[in-house]
Length: 306
Image (tube, rainbow, N blue to C red; front, side):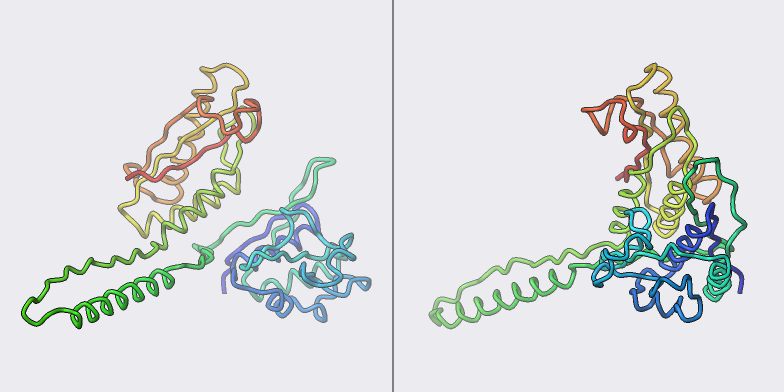
């Protein structure tokens, strides 16, 4: 079968970490047991001094063996229940070749190592291939709670009516008006948009530039799929800058950042331009007002239009 995900890496151990992240993207419901079945230590054997490829935070050796595992927030795997799984860092050339070969079983391929700058920390990034769209993890819905509450309310109303009817005098019938009970159901795509919006609004731009980061492109790709399924959905993308530098330049830069996001949605994702608006806010709406020069002020946000 054609590959679905390609992993680019700048170091052997972080490319192995990227493979594990790719698997979790493709199978968001996976547990730590599923990960161990998918990448069994007996077949891969990363290093003779490491007993497991994965360590769940609930396990007794999670902190004790931390020096042999990725442990930073942007490196650990986060499962559907919010718990964390650390991945082994001890990859020899032979064991790395085995995990690359093993990843092909799940339509994951690995590109040649990218050249990094001297002193630059190794990392990885993912690319979706052959039209593959990763599944959006389903959020737990409380719609059943609302349905149960509505059912209880209806039962209570019926009981009240029966009691009232039993207490009425035959010669003086009463007319009881029953209030309608309305059950509000969650709309799945609204939940998905909220999650995508949280991730995209956290994306920061390089100082003085309007280029989209790879993480922002991934989020826009997911957003485009939601828009394709919901043709009535319209968005406004707003570009923002920090307060550093000339105000006129910041205004033009914020417009360019918003337009970059719109252009990507139109040119790469096929979204009709009439459904998107690009607005530049300059440094007029700082996210961090206490530090106007803070990097989190360099951002682009999207807003759902009514």
